[in-house]
Length: 158
View 1 (cartoon, one colour):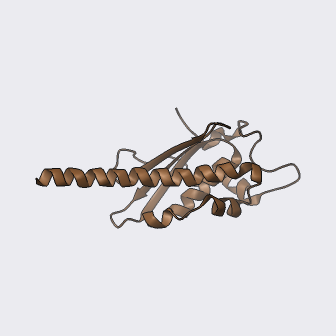
View 2 (view 1 turned 90 degrees about the vertical axis):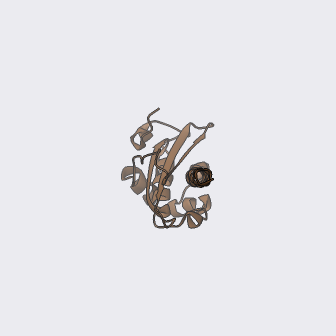
View 3 (view 1 turned 60 degrees about the vertical axis):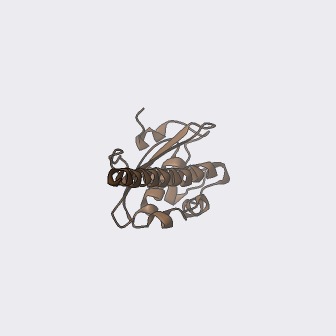
């Protein structure tokens, strides 16, 4: 099914995901209105890891992909999210933060850091948790592809 940051106008998680009446979370609004790194990478590439996670309670779905160079550095990241503004903002920020990091460094990104950076209200913390889960899932997929590659190489040399 197609995922798109643009679907965020649909009500998910009980509200638009932006901010309670009278309050403005500038970082969330910025990432929501101007999401960074929306799109996809080649999921069949051995250098690309794909994470697809969801929150059944509210219907948010997040797909995050990373591309890793030969030195283990994340050189690109893309996302597509079906969900509220806070979910889109969390995805967008996550792609910005993983770029330039090693695979191990990217694993240190925590949902609490994402939530703090975006000033997410408590009711939206699950959005930052999804972003952390998506990063971990993409990294796990990438590592699995690398492991499979090593096994194929070992089998070919025997």
